[in-house]
Image 1 (cartoon, one colour):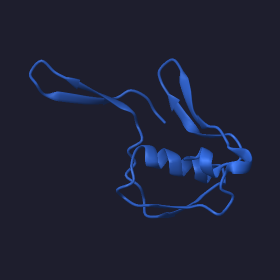
Image 2 (cartoon, helix red, strand yellow):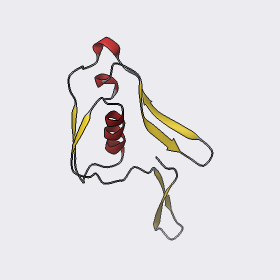
Image 3 (cartoon, helix red, strand yellow):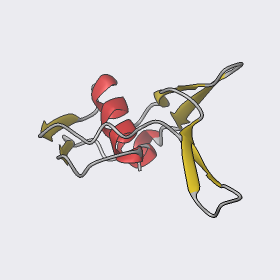
Image 4 (tube, helix red, strand yellow):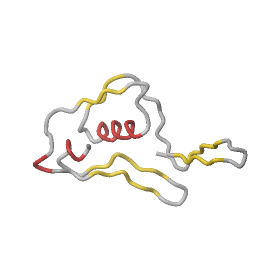
Length: 95
């Protein structure tokens, strides 16, 4: 989606793992991209990837973000089933 509204390549941010950093980037579509104003609406139910998307486009100046505070649920995690049948979800990186 970011590619469709951005003429230039850009970044939505970085995931920082213990031994590496991984960029979340997109490729601009130059002349075929949408050049109009972009306004993203967010609220407390906006979480995870939608927060990365909104924050990255806001930081690049490509979008205006309006609404209320988002969920703050960006951290990637893994879910492991324990021998007891219970599940443990734990964060594996920072954004």
